[in-house]
Image (cartoon, one colour):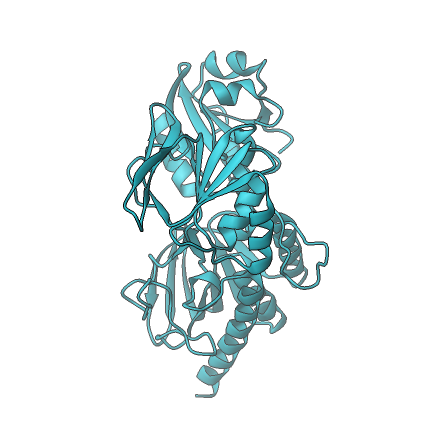
Length: 107
Length: 306
C-alpha cells in the first residue's frame, strides 16, 4: 500500500490529467469496508501494469474537491483516464479479473 | 484431488475453513475478493455474542481471518466461474485453475436486492447506494431516503443520521419488520421520518439523484420526495449463479439443505446467507459453517470406508 501512488486534490491534475500514460484512480476511504476488499487487488494490478498504466489511489476523506468534480457519491469508485479524459467509471467492489479486463481495454 | 473446497470467505466460509483445517482435511478456500463478504459493510455488530461493546464488521472479519491463518487454512484469491456437481468428484473451475475435490461447501452469500425501478441503474454511483457505511459520509447535511423496513434498513438509517440532515424511511407496510430494539431507536430518532405503506416507483434527477417518486399502496396516491440519495435495503438475492440448475433451490433461489447442511447433491454442502433459512446473521452463518465442515468430514470418511 505504501508504494502505491497516493494522489491529492493538489497533485491530481499533474499526476492524473496530465499523465502521458493511461491512469486508473481508486477512490477510497478508511471508513469503507468494500474499499478494503478492492485495495489489495488494485495494488497487485499496479505492479502488473507498471510502466503501462499508472494506478493511483485517492483518499476521499482527506480530499474533498476531486470527488465532487467527478460526481463521486459511492465508494469504491474506480475511474480510468486517457489523455486527461474519463473513459470509464466503475462503481463498487470488482474482482481482479473484471478490473484486468477493463485495464486491457485501456492499453 | 483435494478433500474439500470452500467457496466464499465470509463468516460461514471462514468458520467452515477453521473446522476443516483443524480436522486436517486437505482444504482450499476460494475467495474472489478479500475476505469479508457483506459483514465488511456493517458498521457495528451488536448481536454477535462475546462482544458486549459491539464490534465493527471489518474487525470481526479480520479476527476470523487471523484465526484460520493460525491453523494454516489455505486461502486463494480466485473467482469460481463454473462448477460440476456430481455425486462423485466435484469439479471447480476458477479464473486461473481447475480443482477436483471430494466435498464442496458453498458459502457464496447473498447480494442486496435491487429495487427494480426506473432510474436505479443509471444513478447507481450517482446517488443510489446499497451501502450506508461506504457512502453515508457523502451526504453530509443532505436529505436521503432509505427504502425498506427490516433490520438492515433501520440500522443503516440510524447510521446515516450521523451525516444526513434528514433520513426518510420509505416502507411498503405500516409497521417495521426490524428487531424491536432497532425499531425503538429508529422511532426515537429526531432525524428519521417514516413514510408508511409506500413504495418507490422511479428515481429522478439529471446528472445525479434529485428525488424519488413514491406511491402509497393503500390509497394509490403518487407523490415526489426530493432527496439527494436513495439507499435500498429491501433484502437479499442469493449468489446462486454457479449452482442454478444443479441444486434444488427454494422459490427465491436460496439453496435447500437438510439439517446437516447437505444440498440435493451428496457431498455438496451450503452454509450462510446462500442457504434457504429463517434468519441471516453472523451468528447463524458460523454455526452452519461449522456443521457443514463436520458433515463434509464425515462424508469424506464415508467415501474412504465405502
